[in-house]
Amino acid sequence: MPCSPNGGVFIGAVGKVQRPLEGISAEVSGMVPGNKIALSFYQANAGMEGGITGTPLGSTARWEVSLGAGKLLSEEMPYLGEGNQTWSLQTLIFTADAASMPLTFMVDETEMMGTLYPNNYYVMALDGVSIDCAWDVAPNIHPDPFPPAPPAPPPPPPAPDPPPMPPPVPPTPPAPPTP
Image (cartoon, rainbow, N blue to C red):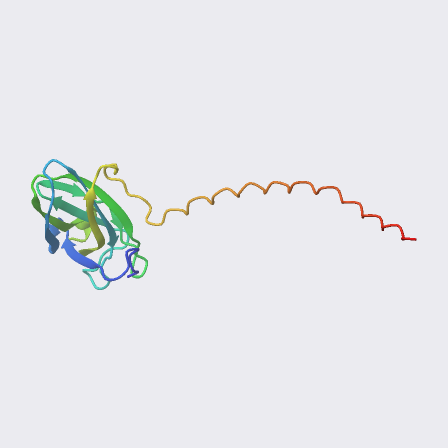
């Protein structure tokens, strides 16, 4: 599985058709009830290779994310095969309902493939979870994890022409010879 843009170690969880088997959770504190919270993270459909229970190519999954009483779904991601997985930055907006709240990620299989492959496993990967105030973040925006570089600054204006040179001073004539 390729490294996430956040780098380092990531975590994953497994689910089956309409039945999450594993979840990831933590208690988040320091919230102000009523404030908007921006929860950002990288996700990838890691899938699981092999056998009759492997993840079907092209099947999609996502995270069901709960923070306090709020519950949102991340963007669906297809399984592209071993070594071909891609990462996507997600931002979900919640409203704090308490100063301390449980944060939970559960795998949500989204394809009708489940009716064809009811015994298959779906694996989602997670990395770089961050929580911030949502003052300047639009809800459910999925920005590009590799935005283009900003345009180069304009070149500096040309240097002004140097001032004109003063006219040359004529040489002093030699003194006349003394008698």
